[in-house]
Length: 145
Image (cartoon, rainbow, N blue to C red):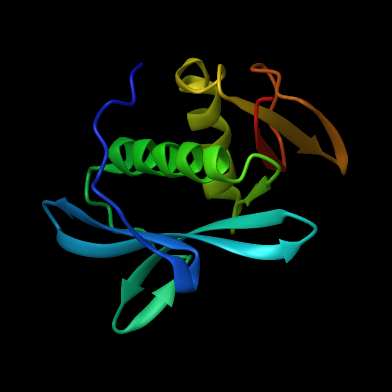
């Protein structure tokens, strides 16, 4: 499957974040992709949504645009890693449901980004190159050198 449709993003350097608006049947929601610096050129990727004035990483808007949001995240990861070629991006789910979704989406759309990114899967604290038939606890993504 292709990841061609993405939301337009705006980068905010002060927050190391890309912001966009999710639009769908439930309305328009402000969302952001934040790269939190963990030190040693490691960044934690967090997808957030603004709800009632708060930035949250544990809400779902159910706006029927999840593939478009995921495509936007991939686009942003490509931009970020191309500009920060030595960076490692960690993706960790906040709950079991999101972890299942992340595993499924990364595996389903792997062909769209495998030429530019190296994806490592971590299971029981052991790191290995992504294998499409396995589920992982979290992921590390790097620009392919």
